[in-house]
Image 1 (tube, rainbow, N blue to C red):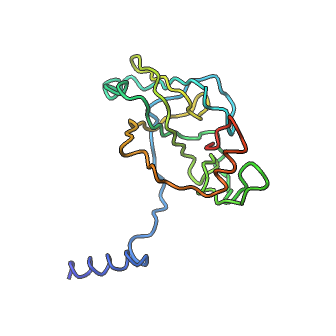
Image 2: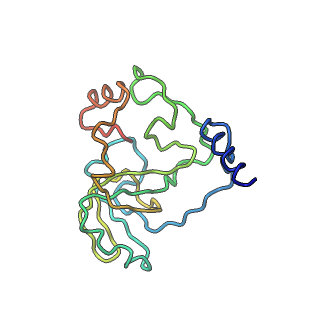
Image 3: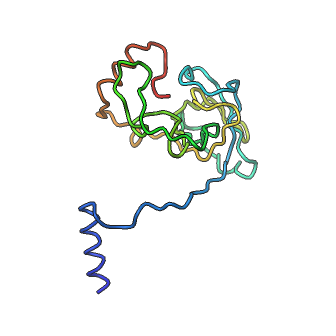
Length: 179
């Protein structure tokens, strides 16, 4: 009976009709590091030359072993200054000539969960401090995880984006359209 029920549940999930509902209870993450840099207020672009120090908890020093052998890392952080009551679901990115987008189809910080993800260049590691270039996070931002960037897994050469993304990037030279 149990096997039959699992098979039935699997068929329903494949059809998009079964399975457990999306959990509503909160997920709790403890910061492993904090960002230190000279940017104190959120901004949409201009991050490409910002150097940031990620200062890790002392108890994680051994967990950083070998990270400095990578040229880039993926940083997962909390956009801690985004108000909890943000209810934005759609917006028009930058230029008024661009189409309205759902917030989950954007790189905006105004998300249902204020989680940021960035691929950044790793400049150096000294003890529990990792210096990176291009992290779009302000001073004091909690870091919840990092991972090494692996080109064979993290780069998708034939990935596509909507036409408006290419138009917005082309029309804004020197700006980071991924904010």
